[in-house]
Amino acid sequence: MEKRQYLKYTTEDFILDREFSGWVINPDKESDQFWNSFIQEYPEKGDLVRNAALIIKSLQPITQEVPQQRINAIFQKISQSSKSITLNYYSQLKYVAGIALLIAAGSLIWLSVQNNHQFPVEVASGPMLKGKIILSNGATREFDTEQTTLKQTASGSLTLNDDTIADHSKNTTTAMNQIIIPYGKRSEITLADGTHIWLNSGSQLSYPSEFKTDSREVFLSGEAFFDVMANPHKPFFVITRDVKIKVLGTSFNVSSYNEDNTTQTVLVKGKVSAGKNKLFAKTIDLTPGERMIFDKINDQLSKEHVNVELYASWVKGYLVFDNVPITEVYKKLGRYYNQTILTEDGLEIITFSGKLDLKDNIKDVLDNISFASPVKVFEKNGTFIIKI
Image (cartoon, rainbow, N blue to C red; front, side, top):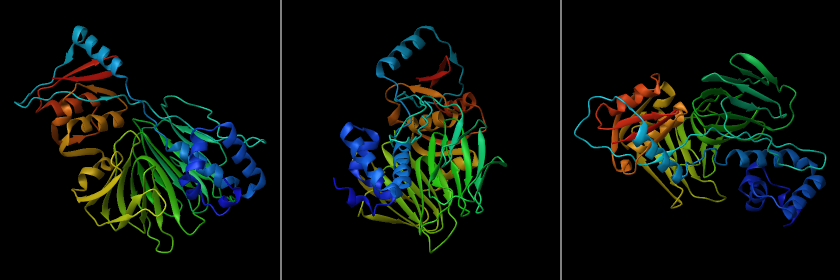
């Protein structure tokens, strides 16, 4: 590798560079030596390198799957000893369970730069019960309210539920703030340009405190609904691990959980173009009522017409499903309520239609699902087991 080839790189260029991302995720002695030497020779690129490394780390998976042996053991114990929650009004349809989902909250990643420029350093890991915001100067603030409101003002201050936690008015860098929302919590964010973002459970968002370049870029892992403030001279980009979405001013939903097999964008109003997050990748234009799907397994993009309420209703506090595999319903509920929901094999072939009020507790929601389904729900040590 030649150091000079990186002198014109932007933060996004570093993120898309295979050699750079490989170093961030799996560093070794040779790559450490190269990139530490690069920063020493070109210190003006330090902020860009730190931002890119932080974003690459934040886009890594933040959930864990339950080992199959553990699932089998749980089912065996439940069958032998647990009492089911009584769920009435079974219909003639038979629902069989099919997917294991353990919702473990995300891990906090922070890049600490010492005098010897050794980074990244992981200072905390494991399940999170509180939300976190990591400021561009490295300071961290936690919040434990189920619904939080963050506002970044044009003057540079940042408030959390009306409490000022930072002042970037004299900030001359484009360093990133990072918001990490654990499962079971949500957040509303207003950026300095007036863009409003609803961030769903188990999601992470990285953004600059002020958009100082000729474009506005944020980086997302998880799910968010965006209401972007129009600015024809400064396009807005949402960048995920797989997809890059360009807008000028519009409302749309993005779902890009690392453990899902697809990344999806649903347009409510305006116009967006989306494509794979690679240099020179083809893009697909969306009009209101269309959904773009990126299939991670087949590495393909497609689009279709949909009912946008099915994908944006979570912002208003409910979920709407129309012939959706019931395993997906349980997956969304597990994320939203931060609950472990396990189901038996076979359920993925069954679809579910209905409206679920997220203001209800998890037991009531599961009861509503079973209203027209001959399923039994077992609860043991905070884990819900769905069986026929």
